Length: 382
Image (cartoon, rainbow, N blue to C red; front, side):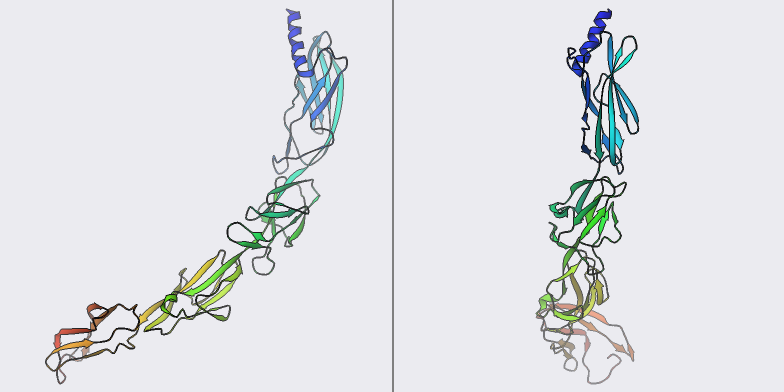
């Protein structure tokens, strides 16, 4: 039974460490390798390393198992008859690790058979991106796609540069330094104090693993102003930044969240309609106001149009003893398509309220009030 057991153990050793007929012992790292650099993003201060080794060697006749000891900067790890150690987490820096291969005999004795060492470096991974999530950006002197990465250690510098470009969503974006919403670089969602230059050098700090340097490009918005009576033959005027323009205006280019001021001028009388300002299309009732657009927009000044009696030649009268007749001509503006006839009566010197008698369509031009007759002198009712 003991011989069978040893043969089973030897079969495991052959599978892991090679032929039992080898005449020498050796062990070496397969991860990390000597002089290598390791980077990944496990956390803001952590990079994950899974050490692996390989080995060859012959076996003592009393061989029980192989014992592999990993000596790190922060303690030792031991595995048996295996090539893979548990995952280890490290911050940035340079590291020197060693591994020792021991043979454990059935007698309980251990013999060191081979050793090896490895030197490697751990770096952070950082990214450079535009705030709209796409396009191109300058990283370490080269134009690359937004979201590209670079590997650095704490204290090293990263050079980044913002590029004016279309954002793919209908806007041209720029590095803005002239206004109230100027560009700035960000990291971990916060502005970097003083990082207002298009080309910027950032010094990597502890905890930056996985962080992204973001270029704060600003959209150029296209803004148009108009009055809501544009289609009546005269669109009127609108004052923009102190200068009058015909409505609708041409497009004004405004960096997002910067100011542009407009004043609704109205149109006092046009083709029988008198217009008075009511509100802007967003509900604001100030005829002069400052806008801070963050997207392309058309701002419309809404006016209330009130028909006038100018040119309608309204008259009322009748032969004595006959019902009162009101006549008129249609308003010159064809948009006026209804007319209301109202009556107000003064009875014994007291004026009553207005009473709506009827509403008629365009083209009628006459109405007879059968409730009252014309007289040749004053009566109780006027």
